[in-house]
Length: 225
Length: 251
Image (cartoon, helix red, strand yellow):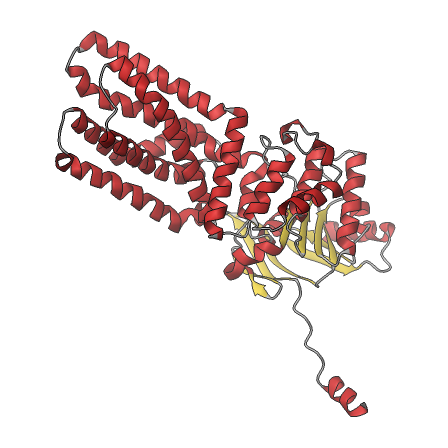
């Protein structure tokens, strides 16, 4: 229970800091809107009607992934500022609590931005995204992406070129999550059944479990000199 | 009674384990070796000042003892327990004040202390926060974001954070850096309280005058090794300056 309380303390601290500055939210939100607007105009020139449904999942997840990278870039930079990460490392708790706290904050921030973006995307692309199966895919994809992103964010925050390094490292590693999310989203938009998209969902679940488990074993080596 | 006293004499009480015991500590960063076999003992309640020029390894030693840095070789024992195996529980007893305040600029003083109180699982949070803020004179500014504080105020809040969980071991790494006169006086007063409260303290500094003020024992770290150590008794500033010059020139 003490471990869980400390994870929640980190989430609380991140929420309070973000509510005060709104730096991360505003950056993620504006970036997502821009991606959707740009894709919308670009696709209008080349495809129309039903074919928009074929490109919509890709555009949606590009917006989610890139805004997520913005959030992840801030996650540990904030901790490095004024040596706060050292303050966390000094606390009498297993260091993996820091990972899970930061991961949960990132998931929360990404989901809030995504909740705002789904209606915007629906309006721009004319595809209905309000489907419970789709919401499940968004949650699983976000968890998998944040799980791998958080450990890589902790690694790159120790380097000088962190803003550049994070996307370079993250996108290849998170590619299976993004591909599975895009395929599953496309399946839902095409009217496939749960059984038909089950293998993509299984892949998303696997990544949502494997990455936190791997981080649990390696996080201490990532954050300590 | 006499017989009993003789038995006590024959079987002396085992000496308590030192609060901090460092043995053959080595720390390398790639090809650079910061610590080259440091041996150091600090008894419970003792105040040790560690002098040394820039690059001597003072900060690395403090980081190793505080469990922030993993040693390349050697052992560190705190309160008789090996730091490499019992770090999580031992951190409850460590308070660190360093160049960095370890505080969140976007949170207020209150929120920072409340957060660290949760991380240390402290009970009676409000009373502790009130007492800590009162001790460093920041009660009136407790609801201001830390990013609006002056350097001196930030360092005072860093002290409040470090003593919030009532640690028995205080590690102070160049705490006077960047402080104005008023803030330095405030810090000195807090350090005097720490020294009087039977806490084990290691203070690192290259300022001989500040370092000698409160210590029970002094040591000089030079080129990653303890090059000299001795009791504070009979050691004045002139003598210390002479020793420091000799050691850092010759070692």
